[in-house]
Image 1 (cartoon, rainbow, N blue to C red):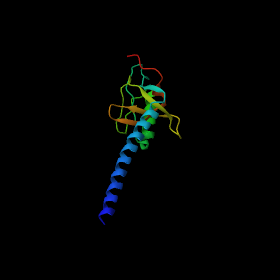
Image 2: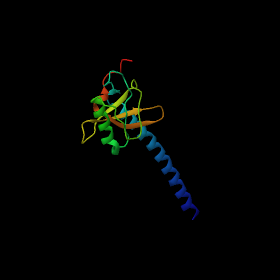
Image 3: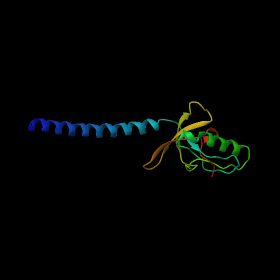
Image 4: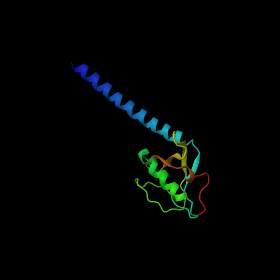
Length: 133
């Protein structure tokens, strides 16, 4: 009886160690794969002034974000109806591609210090070079 419980404890400890090692390596691989994407900058300059981009992390706010930027391009002063997420205009981000069903929405990966995040933004505010500030 005692040897069975010792074997069980041994296998549980080995399982925990393998899980921790696997998780750590998976995270390193994920971050490395994100850094292989092209570097871009996100900023809005429709009015001639460089402004930080508005981003969404939840696709249920997609229509609100697209309507906001379409109105802004038309010279209107729109309001937005989604949680405020942003990034500095001169902060490089990684471009992951466009949202599958809507080519007006670009997917980016933001590498914050200690907080990495995937977000979506309007296609016209994704630029290959940093803003002239």
